[in-house]
Length: 351
Image (cartoon, rainbow, N blue to C red):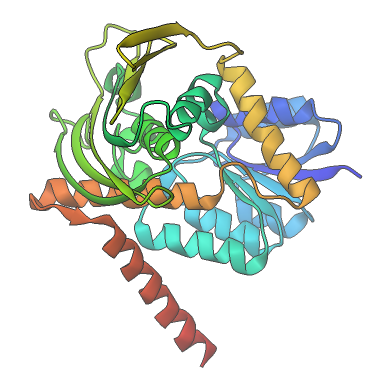
């Protein structure tokens, strides 16, 4: 039996992901929603299926098994919650949501309703990051205690004037956009949770942050250890080519990735080489969408559940607060506060 798929967001990335779903034997694309008339027309021409300006109307008209959401960041929470209310599982592009309250609420709602919630962080399916994570978890470089990560793109030149530079739709700038991938990769490869953050952001005359510098304290619960980390996100001046790297420092050595290569320094020796396996955008997108469909079909946990989205959203929002106040922000306290407030609201509703 085919899974009936609806899509909210039919433009750029949404259209690419729909094409991948359409290749799957067990998925049927049955409806789409988008505020853009042009995007709706393109969808109808391709799939001969109805479209709607309102996602609420689409959900009411169709009995959907799963929904793919690729829309401006601040719309994610309401759209995903509406899907849960109609009994659909959700694939949600990053960042999962904006606002710690929204992140806590969405993850709890998915758990309470028994719904699949998967976040579109494709680096969990990237052989380079998988190998980086394996090196850390193997103990090859000892106990990791420090990390440095950076990302640079000509982001503002490309995005200026679009919804990503409108804080009402994006929730923030480059830190919430491509920077979200970097934060997720750092936390995931280390099996770490954010404890606290201090931050400086620079909007460079724009309406959203372009550059960000973060100082982090991370906890690694499985090893009962902590990591001191720094993160730099740059949104201008890379001359067209994205630049990214990470160094993880352990008690017995360190591992570095840059330019698609991993280098491990241990025992006075250096081991360097390219990671085997396809890492292109289409392959990684296909892997993450296939993982979502598998989770829905088999009733198993997705590889990137909402808990990852919660960590990144909480860290990002806390970083913005730290930059605004000039104070170090306790991320764990912010998450716990949001959970307590949700519990209080639920208790009032139940009464």
